[in-house]
Image 1 (tube, rainbow, N blue to C red):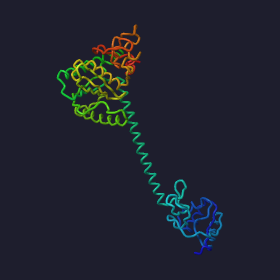
Image 2: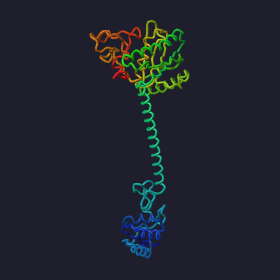
Image 3: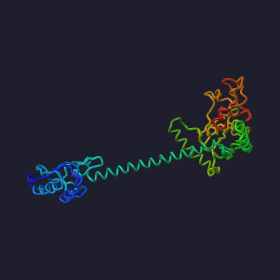
Image 4: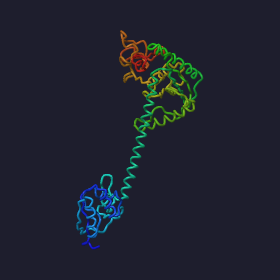
Length: 381
């Protein structure tokens, strides 16, 4: 049609359903689309001949809509790809294709149907990722809470704890060493019963040990190759897998254990006798380095108890030089004179004979649980 004969209808906002029905029939659009067009004052986006515009104005006025025909010179041409009865006048925010006033996104921006669907898909994908992440976080939180509760329950001492002592070795272990360890874990059970009884008469024998191994330890390294975070994380993952394989081989995987203490038996040079360990604070795994030829086992058994107590929440009680801190590293912090102490505190590992001086215990009789460690173990209030 010639541009000079193009008219449109300017309307004031109306919520009249009857007027919306009139507009829906005139423009051949759904009723909801017609209601949206009348929801605010505007020039309706449809090119009409003058006679059509005046008939529409008359019909709308009959239903209380304030409106008038207006010349629309310069309009005409493009129609909306989604609402073909309406003129396309606004560029899509994403692809710049012209769309009508009804083509809007969630935030009111002009969007064609294709771009609107693409945004909706991206939004759904985003919320799916967020939902999965939240679910994973909830599961991790639930697992962590459950695990922490299980670990905390150990300190209620309602039953003897079941603890595996797993021997690891890179070579042949002599029969007398195997026998010494078999007897040694029994001695350690008795020592724990004695020490617990000094604080709580109701505990009985608080720990039952399960001795396993020796298992071959070829290629198994207890310490990380470097201090970087990546090196430590990789070592922890590798060690965890290796120890799981050890558990499987030792038949421990199906047992409900409260903790596992792995003892790496290593040969030593003549005159050298190094025993050390580490454990996850409040966790369930401890690692000890022991002497492969040793049959007396005082230091190894002390280290097993030390790392087990770490798993139960006790902390080291020695200083940077390895000597007992005062008072938490002393078995009798109120003793007068303070030194020498009668025994080594288990979380220190040496008998204090003077300030910043100590010697190794000669037997488990010279190792005790001090009052500060007893509090950590909930043996004492």
